[in-house]
Length: 75
Image (cartoon, rainbow, N blue to C red; front, side, top):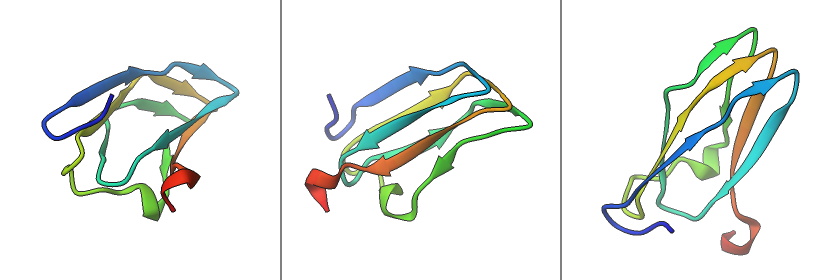
């Protein structure tokens, strides 16, 4: 789904839980979610320059959060 010029929008709501999102290299992650005693964690390896698209995260996180990691197939 990712490629140059592509924006993927994920709306993730969570209450006392979370999600794990795997991305390919080069994907820029933009976090616009709202955290209430929680938030998202984007690993250092998953912070791309946008050359392979953009992942836009939105949603509400109540005592929860999502983890964004580089897919192991690309390490």
